[in-house]
Length: 362
Image 1 (cartoon, rainbow, N blue to C red):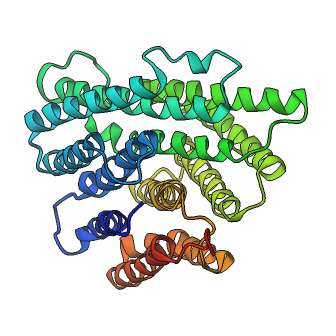
Image 2: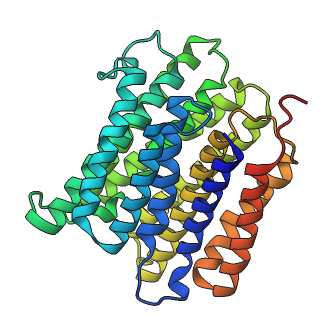
């Protein structure tokens, strides 16, 4: 990716984080939609399209999606729902155009063994993005206009983090693309199992959220946690030894951390510690680690995909990432002074990742 486009994403991602701290300065205004949609949909969705098309520069479709997703984030924040619905339909057709051109309309890759696991996850990422855009429009219509479905949680707020799933899937696609071929039948079985458990599991989990069933949510989230841990073991055993492996292994660790906080959030409803303050604390940590730990790892690898290896101290930059995401940003959500420290730390981390010199041709 060109330095100009990397600069664009640097600004978008950093701006997303800054909006996450704006509640300190504009009391009563909720910046969550702007904060999360800028990262997951504007940066994440655009990079999925960019990565799928395989062009060094933005194509027309990538450009249309980027502009549309930026406008969608603005209109959703301003609660201009008619405009948001229209734009989401435009984005849906862009994604479907890219998906069908690359993989075809029917997801045959899911069911045929001749396709690589990376292709299965890649197609699932695009399909999930398409479905998410349609469901977000339907959620707005259901919540604001017609009440077609009786579920209290079927609203746009449900999709704040829902758009992170396509980013998760494209990251898993990259992880499986740099794994060796499974040497045993059991490891091959685990690869196939991971695809189905993760994809079907998230769909089932969403249904359980709508029905507000904590016990069932714990069961499926625990299953997903175990499956993610198995993917981590597979990647440790089969992943090629290269710089990307360090970053993506750290990303999977963030994903496991996210799973643990998600389970803790659900368990809280079944304990005597279920207060608004405790629930908000765990939810905030869960969201931060998901967005700026796991998701950002995947986006960073896509942004520098053609540049690896890059000239930086991987261990130091990964340590800075963990300190920033696990400590400074959560503190920044509650203490204004730490929001400044977290922003500076995050800006430094992101700059080093995106603009360090490539060593590919050295």
